[in-house]
Image 1 (cartoon, rainbow, N blue to C red):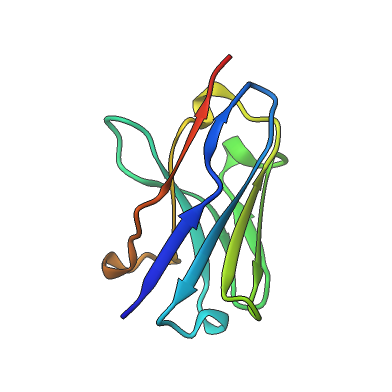
Image 2 (image 1 turned 90 degrees about the vertical axis):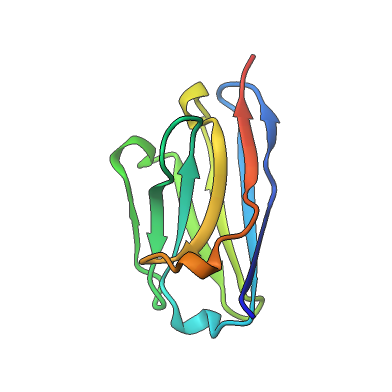
Length: 115
């Protein structure tokens, strides 16, 4: 059974930083492209960053230069370093494969950016 467990969210002031983690089990993590997705109230989950099995990364325009996705295949863990947080970054962050697998969704981790 696949399990993805996100952590590292919290309440931060604008301009602050967070590092999100996603611990994966039940999948051959190293062989999967992975992504971070964000859901804000009233909207669908949207992709923000992806990383291939070989470490090639991509980002949506609004987060380029501020978000860094990375992975540690030895630890079966995906990361998202977020710098320069803005109020519009507020939402629940999820990890999943890229493209998504519906049966992989975890609980997510809440990020709230507010002064």
